[in-house]
Image 1 (cartoon, one colour):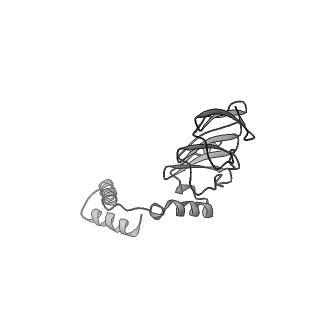
Image 2: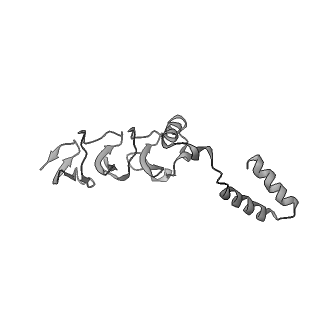
Image 3: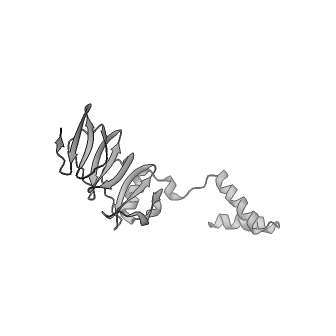
Length: 165
């Protein structure tokens, strides 16, 4: 506890309140005065920069070390945006913006969505579809191919990034 919290709880104890009641009152005080940790006051970009410097996983909203997939990556969430880290804690996607949604790694690629458009990244964080324009929609890979929608037409894309009609 911070020193001010200790002093607050001690003051409540001095007036005869039990320890559990003191802690409950202190928790209520925190909510009322909206005390936050220094990380909560950081912008998204500052949190990413701090993570890159420290690999402090507590900055993420969610990370589960037990769910590293066969490619050695796991999904992380920060302020509702998605990325991946490898077993060494390095972020896969180095883009300025993180993803709005992600799928699952299949055939070495994972489907990602950003600003309503779709693409795929590999375990190194590289885009499969290198064109500036991303897909309107995309489905997961299966046996080396994924179905994608581009300009109102459906295509299959292979793991080399080539479109097939």
